[in-house]
Image (cartoon, rainbow, N blue to C red; front, top):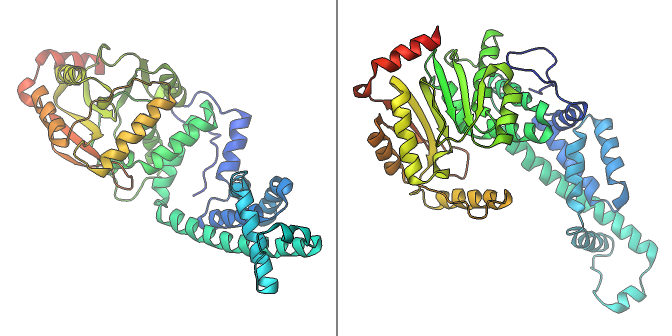
Length: 403
């Protein structure tokens, strides 16, 4: 289903997206069916292979208008003829054109250049570029169609994730792009809602919430359910008080802008922030950024503030994941370098060690793989607060907060 920028009010939405963001959103999402996306890539490759290097942008815009295709994707695909690739692409096209006309290739020599007939050369280039462009366009379209079709979601699920991502348009197109990709391709957000893992009511705390993607999905889930646009077979989404704590000020600001009054976002250090009494907590890809002692201390503080039988979700990396763990470690190191955190240290553990750490803090911790569709060794641990640590004071405090 093709998304559209939201014009009606929804819970938690406070700042409308800018005109530029809306325009970028429209260009990014127009003609989004698998067939039209595939056609856009195919036409883009065909234009990119043409020798009219200075006209690729107007040709892309015209083709998109003429055939009703995504203009941005056509132009992006047309950039296959970038400065690094163009020399090799033009050479191949000339040789293909010569072979189709004469049955032989151009000899690579100075003598060939001296005897070159410009009109024959131009004809070979046009014929070769059309042939190579059609071939590459057909291949690109086929690969795109297969990929998009396989990754296509059930309409109601796709609508839920698209609406959650739209909340980030107020922070710019890049923020929307990040949210759109993360919500769509990271399985943890869908899994938590699909399996009904959260309590129906109470307070949900997202520690290290980043840009608030899980909170946005939960907020939008309520709106979609009430509108009757909810995936078949999924349990009703919970009605929770949503609280997020994030160390990075920029991420916290983006989260609050996206969620508005739908959630409370606190920009605080996780290792020192006061934790509210809660019924459920999530730590999604957070603990490995903390030192081992801080991991231990944070989980103990959570055990002290969570209500009896409260549930804690931890999505973390399995250090025993072999080559999949290598992808995680490499990507995390690259991200740290790009952010300028040259000395960033990570504290990875195996799944057994994560479970043991949770047991030591006062949780029981069964786990399941949570890296489906990704090259990462991720696991999701669903840790239940052990009732032996129950505190009447916490229960009284929670009752006062709910009132």
